[in-house]
Image (cartoon, rainbow, N blue to C red; front, side):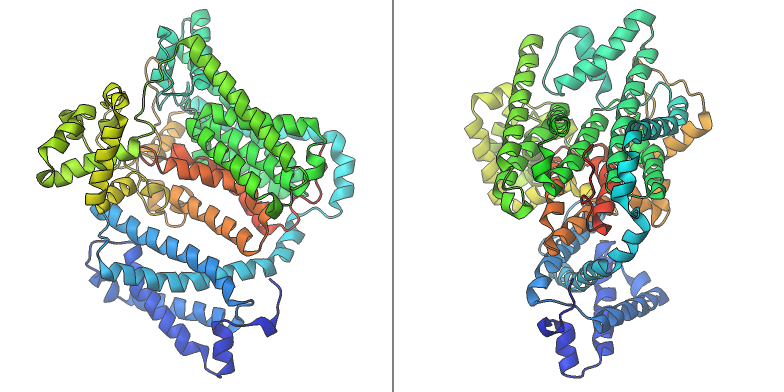
Amino acid sequence: MNDNREQRSDITEYVRKRQISVKPLAGILGFLLVYALPVMFSAKGDFLWYTNSVFSLLLWLLFFGMFCHMLQKGFDGSKKKWLLPGLLAMIFSACMAFGAQLEYKESVTFTDTGMWMNIGVLAVCFSIVIRFCWDGLSECKKKWQDKLLVKDAGQSLAQEKCGQLRSFLLTAVAIFLCYVPVFLAVYPGFFVYDAQDELMQVITRNFSTHHPLLHVLLLGGIIQLVYKITDSYNLGIACYTLFQMITLSGIFSVVICRLKNEGMRKGARIGIALYFGLFPTIVMFSLCSAKDGLFTGMALLMVVLLRELVSAPETFFEKKAHVVLLGSASLMMILFRHNGFYAFIVFAVFLTFTCKMTGICKVWKKALLLFAVVLAGYLLISTGMKTVLRADDSENQELLTVPIQQMARVYVNEKDVLSQEDINTLYEVLPKEALERYVPKVSDGVKVSFNNEAFSADKAKYLKLWIKWGVEHPFTYLNAWFMTSYGFWYPDTVIDVYRGNSVFTYTYEDSSYFGFEVEQPGERESKLPLLEESYRRMSLEITQQKVPVISMLFSPGCLFWVMMFVMGFFWYSQDYRKLFPYVLPLLLWLTVILGPTYLVRYVVFLWFLLPVMVWDLIIDNNCAILTHG
């Protein structure tokens, strides 16, 4: 931000004009933050261990020094500069307070005045921290850019253009080789998360649109083809796993090569390659049969290409290869997950209304035409597959998972005040035995028995009941939704949504971080048992969550707030070109919080996007030296 002292109208200038020491104010802010902090990480109500402890004193001294430094350094700009940090801080504070109560009590007490006061205090303190960090980023960028950008990058890249293919292949092979030891340890791969159901659709030729048909055919087709040749399902699963490893290694290599074209130094590129090849969460889903890996890879590729579109809009459409790649990645993304389709439609509308902000006015019609072709291709392919395969598309419960969970929670918690007529109406679509299987964190046990025929026969009748109960029990509805989504926005969540559920080879206990197993007809044949055990522990135990700081690298909620911090900074800096591509993953995130539960698999894109987000955060001219080769 520009240093313009004449425009100062913030709290620091107020203090300076009146020659007031910042230390008393810093001391008050530090005390208020220490006092309000427990609402973020505990809902038990007994804070004596914290309040009557030297630890609270040490925290106050830390916050006192932090606020002294911030207030003395000052904040440039007008009062409007506080709006976005204040809004982000308020949402973050509320999410932390709500998440703490949901984690311990499985509900938020919305009438708790003390909670709301603490949220207000936290919001004030965090808004100061956020704005200080955003202002400081601008000052630090020059130093970081000198370390991360290649000097004379344009000339260097022109000389190395002939080595683009070689660089791509070497990077892809290196990432793939990082996966090989884990592949051997968990051979034939992680055949889990609806894998058996998708395979059985191919074997029995009894298809449904419950899972994306493209992935059903791809997964089941490869496995069944290899099985018919070798009479081994394990070898078929291994072939599909290798196919996905190769595909994702290639996508990651494309991303790294494009960052190279933007001037990223070799050391940074090696670090990102090692991150893609070794970070456990990425490795898990690169070797997992679930559709999430390929879907997320396509979403990552789409975001990277959208960055290039907004950075050089007039030249982007001159390169047919770029247009085809963006269109193909978009099409594959929405074909691999149903929620990708909904996010893509909203994103296309968003493009139309923000063309001036992003500087793509001259090409927005071309971009919109490309997205229209993608949507047309999706409708043609999905309709064609559904028709040819005679797939059943009568299911409604995936779209209604939040209302189903809300009504089930009202039934379980408020049954005494419900009329028998309303209960009987509910029984028509949700049998009593299904409602009794209600658990707060996941809707699978209830929605599996949803009566689609009865619902389709009279949708208005059940919509009316849902609205009626929502008016009568609004907090119950909110808590029902929060309980299936808070792991996506509360960093301290322990992901244990399947606790007590028995699967093929084990029973979930402390953690449901990752499925880990091999569903039938596959069977685990580990070649490296020690490495297999390390992944088992990360998947099914809270091993990594016991390590401070490191645990946050595995947290969906933490990475979500990293994304919000980065996007907020772009908006705060009025750098809308950088902000635009990340609207897509934000829309994807908004679709998953309406899903059946919170699992890492639904937001793997947060891990895939992290290196690109950090690069955009610290580099000003991130796309200024693209070779467009």
